[in-house]
Length: 62
Image 1 (cartoon, rainbow, N blue to C red):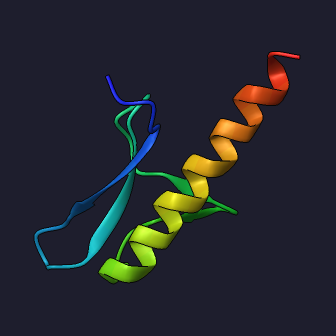
Image 2: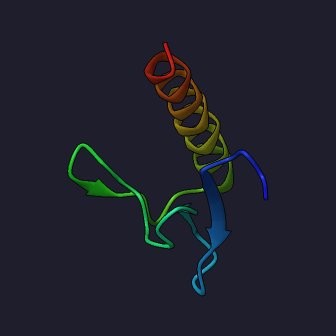
């Protein structure tokens, strides 16, 4: 299994959504579902969320 918690998936309308692989649900950030994104924005958000998740997991181990 990948160590990436978040991933992106193309929606039926051609936009992109961010999925939390741990839950299978669409990710919510600051109260907003991460849907309707263009590919670049989704890719950037996935990178950021995975970076933050790795940092959180690393800090909780210490």
